[in-house]
Image (cartoon, rainbow, N blue to C red; front, side, top):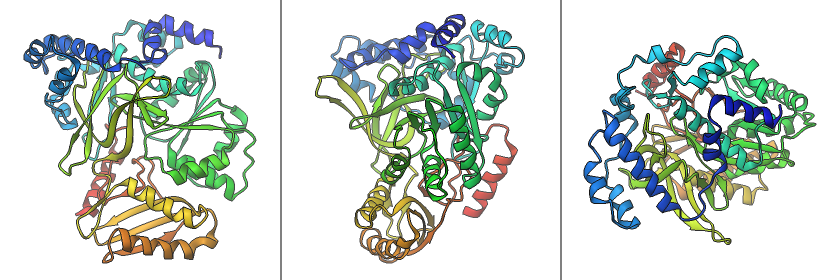
Length: 490
């Protein structure tokens, strides 16, 4: 598909200016004063036109109207932070006044029918697009997006791809698990997607057959960009090497997101996809993509989000995010429950960057030792790096399961089975030295990690971890899975 046709579609839908604003424009100088202006505008709007937030910011806006930027942001950091539970309980009342009491079913976006009819509905904007977040319970947050909100969120993903070098019209292949992120609904309308260069390849499990099918698809379709999660991509690389699969075409661009990206995974992937640029992104269902890989960390899109951190109960820096320029379902000082550091830095060219570094994932994403100490993903990433320094990059994947703070099951995938004994011996030595000498460590070597990919894949997994990727509204099978896991945990 030509780029001109993309531009025509954006113009027909009435979102061309929004595309340019979100995707093409950057903030790389004087970031904080511009963010302040966006925050003041957002708070002023919802302070008057939002039943849930009405009147909450009157005093803040008045008192901080003329203060300097440093004082403003310090005061902003004192405003209450809201959790996913707060938003779930508030429900539709967090929407703008004219939408807070409408029947959402009467506004639900449906695009069945001919493409022209779908385009007309998308252009009119008389709809609410429901999106379910993930979460560790069976009651995820339902976000109802207006046309502006939906396209503003969509274009944050486009911005990641645009940063890598993809342009509208270039072919893209999406390799995602079935029944996640509304992906199955998107595939139903794949005849529309193909018109704009999208192709979907869905999977249930990662095994030899799955990877062979994907390699065939890559060789035939020859996409510019491949979208995939880190662990499936690493298993793809592992399988290509293990079975010597004929990878005749390598996508120039591969964008990974949604999981912790370990150094061992990246190294193994890049050893197979030698002609591909592999880059990481960060975001969430409800906020869209808010950061993309750059030197020193992941660069926050400063025209889309303002990110702070506050210590959680364990003293870890928890991210608090405000989604800029979206007031119809606003996220103001929203607790992500993700652990990371955030900082402003300047590069050698004097450009300012707003970076997320040292991402640990959810604040529950740790292994607890029998001594009560928490071990986050960064510990395990360093642990594998130490193994690989001494054992010639033998470990390409690790999965750690907690067993009631007394035992860990550690699964490895190795580049060569000849390393098994040395990996086991060194692992036990390091774990006894660095974690606990009184815990039991059960080490296994596998060809594939056995994982239900509807659930969030985490390198470390605690008992009862049931977060589904992209929500689970109305999904009885997922609800039953949650009940089974919770029963096992108790």
